[in-house]
Length: 264
Image (cartoon, rainbow, N blue to C red):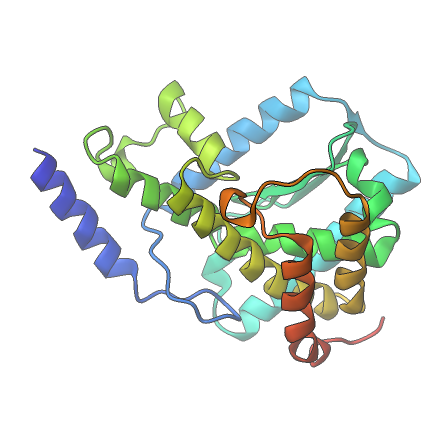
């Protein structure tokens, strides 16, 4: 049975490996149907918002909405110009500010975004918020969560039969989704996650530039993050690259991002 599952998995991966991530051109294997990922994301997003305090009708909350809409519109326009609108098929964009001291923000498959109040001092201004927003949206556009789930199912063939095994009503699969859509659990997946972070940095800088925000602010955001200090694990044990790595990466692609920059 496991051999059959392995054959099915390999066939699906080979069949999708020719797909490329927009802007970077990296080949990727992400065989789980987007509708499946989005269904699980919408369910989990709704539950999260019910269980946490959503901030509304404040200048910061309004800024999250404004920046989110501008960035998502720039993404949609770019994808349409490249005949890649299928990347956002079924997306239901939503941008929420959540009361939390955590320095965090994320975008689920399907365009569901959460921006925590704890990250506001590091975004500092609208352009900084656009840098973070562009980065998180890039994860969804690049289907990074799908890739991680695909990789995990490949590792755990004995416990899952590919995309058909995923169900929003299956607690075990939902738990796996929650972990892998934003986090990795093994060193191999950690490295995979760091690669995704740098790719999202590059794509996000372009998305913010297209939305009318100067991409140099992305570097300033990570300088502020670096100044926060605190103990950090070695980079090879972290899901995220160190700030110095990110800054160097952003500087490398700044010229590329500036091509897309149009002040508004």
